[in-house]
Amino acid sequence: LLTMARRRHDQAIAALSKLVEKKPQAARASLYLGWAYAKKGALGKAKAAFKRAITADKTLSAALYGLARIELSQKRVGSAIPLLKQGLKSSPKHAGLLLLQASVEIKKGQLDAADKRLKRVGLMVKSRRLGRGDMSDLQVQRAGLAIKRGEANAARKHFQQALKLNAKSHAAQLALGKLLLAAKKYKEASDHFRSAQTIAPNSIETSMLLAETMLLLGKPTEARDALGSILKRAPKNPRIRLLMGRVEQTVRSFKAALAQYKQAVKLDPKFFEAY
Image 1 (tube, one colour):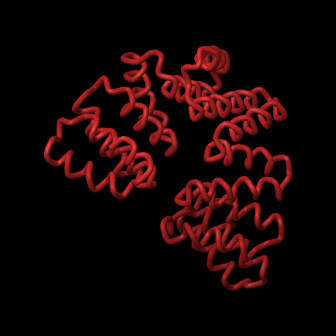
Image 2 (tube, helix red, strand yellow; image 1 turned 45 degrees about the vertical axis):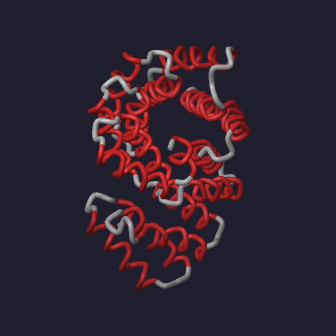
């Protein structure tokens, strides 16, 4: 079931759902179900499964890690912090939890604390206690720390190392794309955003960044394609409407552009970019 949850998501979901229904206290069945849903991109259902696993076993660090990871991906730092604290209390050497905690510290500007935590995880690499996925995530967090310290070149090297370890790291592809976008290396940035979109096609942030980069490259049709894939799922996102307006304006469809800008302002009257 574990292998199935990681690779054959639909089959895993069908089998594990039946098992959880029969045995709601089977913590690991709910855990694997959460992983299967997460791999499929059904984050709401993944969260529900992880929560059910934690209810059955409050010390199940893998479920706490899975839930905290989703919360952080949805920018709910406040919800993730107690999960990380609970997980590290029961499993203080859990590399995934340590890396997530470091990411929170980096966001908060607690750079010395994050550095110490990352060095601790680095020792696990030397003792061969980490898989390639965790080793890649370690490089992503080292890159994030470097960015906070204003070390762009060091950050890029860490991201590149992360992708050597795991080419399917959405976090590394997306973050490296952002770094290149900030450096005005639009073509290179677009390549990484495309890779990130392939890995996580449901990511709204990735599609918006790809669209923005396509506009900068003078490719409005490709920008429209990127936005069209997410507009139906997030019709009330004012930034998507703004970018759609810029696409229409670029192709000189001024009436359509004005309609998109008006919709952006209607959705968020304080969204000054749309005025």
